Length: 233
Image (cartoon, rainbow, N blue to C red; front, side, top):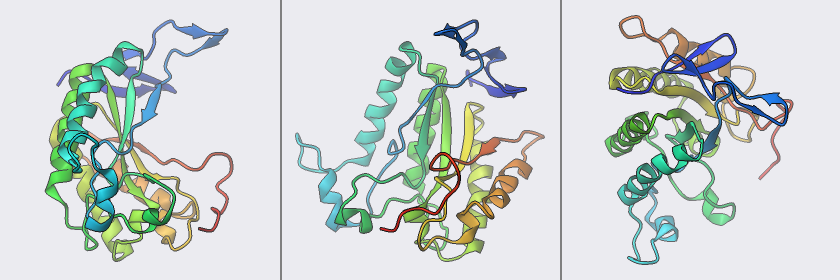
C-alpha cells in the first residue's frame, strides 16, 4: 500500500505530508486542502434491464459496468498529474439522469435486505488499488437517498454501515475517507436515520469500528448551506 491519508488539525496529509505543501492561490493558502472530484458512478451498474439500455456504449450497443470501472481506473494517473488528489465513489451512485428513468433504475451495492452484491465490491477494490498506486484518496460514499429508499429498514442501514466499514478496513488500503450519506437532507420518503436529525448515528458507527486499532475518518455531505428540506420530486 503506497498512499496513506490522515488529518493533522484541519489539514489533510498524504503519507505524512500536507496536501499541496506550500501552495498558495490568489493569495489564499491551499496547503492541507484535499481537492477532489465527485466521480460517483465509477462502479455503477443498473439492475433494471428496462433502464440499463440507456447506458449502452455507442461502439458495442451494450452496457458494461466492468468497462466503466476499468476506464475510470485508467484515467486516475492523468487526473493526478493535473493536481487532483481525491475522487468520490458511491456504493449507490448518484442521479445519472433526471427524468422518468431516475425513478426506475437500480444502482446499489446492497440488496433490499442489506446483502452485499460482490461485483460492486470487486469494482471498488479495483478503484482503491488504482488510486493507491496513483497517490490518490478515495472518498467512499455509502448511501444515496433515491437508492437507499429500497433498503428494508433502519436495521438494514445500520448493518450495512457496520459491514461496509469493516470491509474497507479489511481491504488494507489506507487511502480511504468515508462519506456516509450523499446530501443528508430531508428527502421525501427517506428514513430519518439518513436525515440531518440522525445521520450522526451512522457517522458514529464508522468512527467506532476498528481493526487492529485502526479507524476510518468519516463525515457526511449535504446540499450546501443549511440542511433544509429538499424540493419535492
